[in-house]
Length: 172
Image 1 (tube, rainbow, N blue to C red):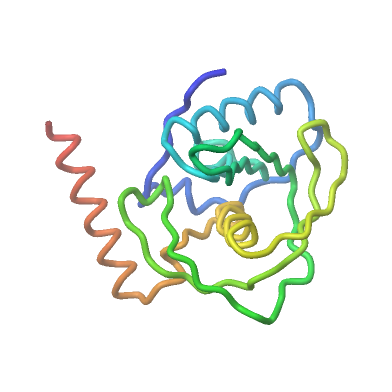
Image 2: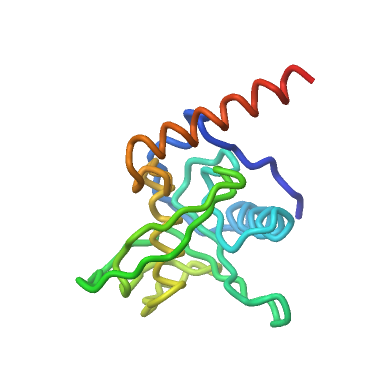
């Protein structure tokens, strides 16, 4: 396993639509293991493959708290089924939009159909933080960032700040 660099906005690769996975094999499991290690190192609770430069429909997540046993989850080719009409608002952040957090409204519940780490089809009932996190990560698979759910002014302000920080980092 190895830690991979995380791509940050406004990198255009984050706007790519990820391709479906053909087969869950050892190569894909190695990618998921790397993604999990990268996410833990960041630290974060979710990571989509595109965030490490791989445009495949793969997500890893772990919502376990600091004092809990790790509980990694792997989602290959996930699909949202039956999003609820009730909405929840959570303060979201993103490893690809470092150090920025804002409230985003999303469906409070959904079901998710996906292939697991071994390639077996699963259906998961998700609510609260799990529903928010899976929807956030699935947005990445469509080339959408959480800041795209904010007002244009807020989004532009965040992107301008990130560009400035990247210029300063490159100059030093």
